[in-house]
Length: 181
Image (cartoon, rainbow, N blue to C red; front, side, top):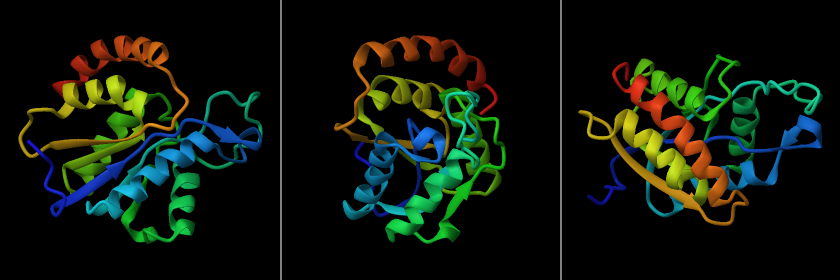
């Protein structure tokens, strides 16, 4: 079924990289945020954005990260000018970090805030296919009131071997958590 762009959608994305040892967003994360902006230009009625990633656990590698990834991404989207701050929801759970934790936190926020369960997953292409497509389909696919669509940005740098390995790792977790969603 083709997505009905004129229905309300909740857009989500995942961070990928930092700049300046954690002080800013990296180019791949910005590419993912730009894909949300592009989806709106393509006609998606994005009524909310949910960002759920917190503080990176690798403090030695990213010593300048003083703010959660979700807040940094929100600030980028607001400064870009397409979305007002009021429609961007950031998780207060700063421990959510890997893709499965961020996905579960995102689902929790969508439910708690009664946001549209039409979910537009925006990310780099090989992150979506296969990892995020598999994870979201296993968690919410076929469930009542959940509709999924995917908006890949194919300019990203992740490759298929990395994402296949991540997909294999997340399948058992997604199957386990499906009963809780």
